[in-house]
Length: 300
Image 1 (cartoon, rainbow, N blue to C red):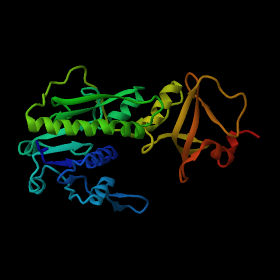
Image 2: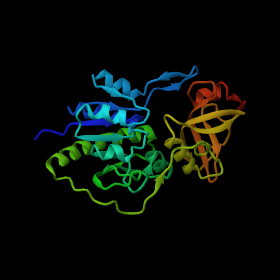
Image 3: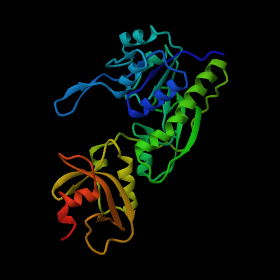
Image 4: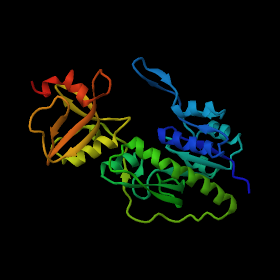
């Protein structure tokens, strides 16, 4: 049985991981749809999404419509002859005009209905969860509300950040796409209603990044790892905006200031900052910070 021809839509790093897995499984899509180039960096020059570069490196056509459901964009996509549209961390909501013309499935890095929405892994890690998962569902008008054709639980180490969690979820997502495409082709995929209480994984906002040092130490560490390695938890350190990239929770403080370890009080214990980045500077280990800009915290 030949596999269904499909097009793939994605923008976020997770989508790039899934696309790489599909290409590695000799199951490349007909074309890749991603968001338009966006201004980034100090000078605001338009930069392509990394998935665009990855797709072109493998000779895949890339489409970048401003709105994927507009008639011209739909016509351009359909010209490639896909039988299914696979959407993964794309960043656009598709309307019924496209769904009526092309069967569409969504690869979502959570066990829906838990953590529907834009930031499922980040929200799960913030909640201290270590069992995450992947779901492939049929796209409907409601966000991540369609019936489920595939799901798999994936264990994530308690110290994993969001980047590592997405890496661990990607192989299950690739398996889910391939199983769903084969199931649709054979007529054996069983779409089942979502079961359980729905929770919503809202997009990460400015306030979600701010560290509240009155919260429990473990909650702060979960916040830090949920926002690493791309977003960053934010605090003020020595009067400067500082991103905390890695941290660990502890119950006992240091007996005296240390030149090597940066330990800060939390609501019920202590948080050791392991890696940080002050505004205008590069990421660095806490020891390097204490020997330089942060020496005032390290004692004599």
